[in-house]
Each structure stands twice: as C-alpha cells, then as structure tokens.
Amino acid sequence: MNVRIIGSGSIWTKNNSACYLIDGKIMVDFPNGACKYLYRFNIDPGSINHVLLTHFHGDHYFDMPFYILNKSKSENKDGTIYCSKEGKTKITKICNLAFPNSFKKPHNSLNLKYNFNENFKVEDYEVQKLLVLHGNMKPAYGYIFSKDNQSIGFTGDTSLCSNIERMSEKCKYLFCDCTFLKGTSKHLGIDNLQYLSTKYPNCTFVVSHLEDETREKLKELKIKNVIIPDDGQIISL
Ligand SMILES: [Zn+2]
Ligand SMILES: [Zn+2]
Image 1 (tube, rainbow, N blue to C red):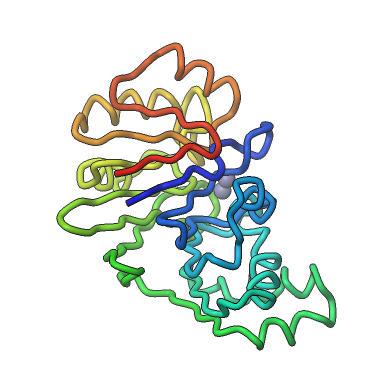
Image 2 (image 1 turned 180 degrees about the vertical axis):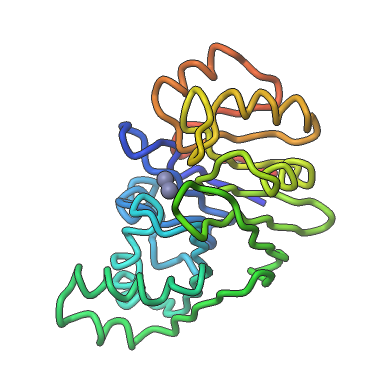
C-alpha cells in the first residue's frame, strides 16, 4: 500500500486538514479544501474512485461538492462513497447549498454509488468499518484495510476507546488522530499515544489532525514507533 498524507493538521493550523490518499485512487476523508490540496500535489481529484468518510464534521467532508462536480467533468465517471447511512442526505444537502439549482445535472451524469456496509471490498483490500468515540458526533468510524495478512488502519477523529485498542493490536500501521497534548472525550492526545505505542510495540502510529503545539512536543519526545508526517509525505507499506 502506498499512502500519501494529503493533510496532517487540525483546522486551526496552516497544515491541510487531515486526509489520506491510498494507491492514488482511494481517499480517506475529503475535508475543506481537499480538491485544492490535491491539485497542489499535481493529483487530479477526478482520478479518485473511492471516498471513505469517517464522520460528518466539515473538516472531513466539506469538499464533496467539488469532488462530485469535478468528477462530472472528468472522463472517469465512476465513484463510490463509503460512509454512515445519513451520508447521502448530508452530501446532497451541501451540494445543493454550494451550487443552487445547478447540481442535479452534473450529479446525474455520474455513476455514483453509496456503500453503507460494515465490511466491503475496495480495489484489492478487505475493509472493515469500526465505530469509534468522538464526543457527541455519532456515528464516527475508523477503517481497517487488509490484504495478504497485513492490516493498515485509519482512525478518523476519536478518543481512546476499545476499537482504537483493537486497531492498534491488529494493524502494522495506524494513521491516527493525535490532536492535543492530552486526550479528551473527542480526540486522542500525546498521553494516549504514549500508552498505545508502549502497549502495542508492533504497531507504528502515524499521527495526524495535529495542533501545532502537539506536533512540536511529539518531535521533542521522539517516540520510537510514532511517525510525525508532513503534508504530502508518502509512506510505502
Ligand atoms: Zn470531528
Ligand atoms: Zn476533525
């Protein structure tokens, strides 16, 4: 698997909002500005065939109108969106807000599908969708991609919960929230990462959704199995 960190920051930083591109075709989350971020890395948003959304906060899905509109202008009209059941209504609503009275035609020109299942296949990966705890935002999900007995996880926004421990145990790499110095009921913090990286030494944690002071502190701490990526960094697994 080839993972490009398109965004590694929380909203209130100069870094792009957290999202990842897998093998050039699969996006995990599609935040505010995602199309622009992709263009800056010379990636055409129209080349993306699969979008997996972790939850419906704006910094995780607000560029979906631009993705869909871009797709309608692209030769590649196929797209599948994986999310919770209310996703279709939410995405349709923001698309109509973004382009009143002119969205239906481009939207209908696409072969756009929604997948709300817990387990599904994306390209060559078996994917499992797991509930995580993110304050009052319910549901919020993480995803585990598995292929050839290797599993890679993506937490989305989450606090420390049993499924985060399951993901840490199962995955060789876990791309995870680490927003704050200290974990809260909404986000993981450095204290949680210290606990997880010690308890699950076989997992490498690639932290994301970082506030600036968290990034600085993590760099000082130099935890062995924690990677602090920059926007645009490619991690080949
Ligand atoms: Zn969130
Ligand atoms: Zn967020």
